[in-house]
Length: 229
Image (cartoon, one colour):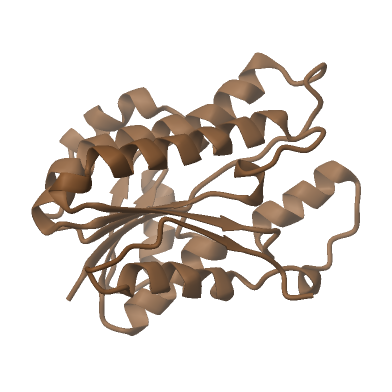
């Protein structure tokens, strides 16, 4: 039985992935921002355990984890959680820049750093669920795209650094996906939201499972997923 630690499992891609892994009998450790959210996620995925830490405050993650029982084995660390606030460079405040960089980039780096010793023992895998914005930036997406471009750089550097330890590193770049985040993006863009027009979260979960289940003689490095029509 494999053990998977997932951020952002409460909805969208993270929830779809957690359900797939739980249904096939794998063990889940789900990361939540506070105790209340941890209880909600635990009820959503019976049998899963939880860890609590606020990704918006990456500097406190080490302290938060030191107060909890970490799993002795982790086969994969999957970073799904993210936030987005759109706006032009002329309009975005430092607070909005800092929030997106903290949750989308610095927290994944710090959580990975803290869990690397366990991942090395299991020769595990780190999966960064990035975004199409991690490959190309558009108007009004500067802060979010910068955080996701940085996330790709983090993954590439980590892959090179951990090659000798056997830790695999994968970046997944989904296009627009039918998630609560996508609904928020449409609200910020002032557009009507039709979830049927975008990728189903379960389809992205399938690509993550493909990377996780790939035999050890290979690894998926970068994988882009786009709507089929």
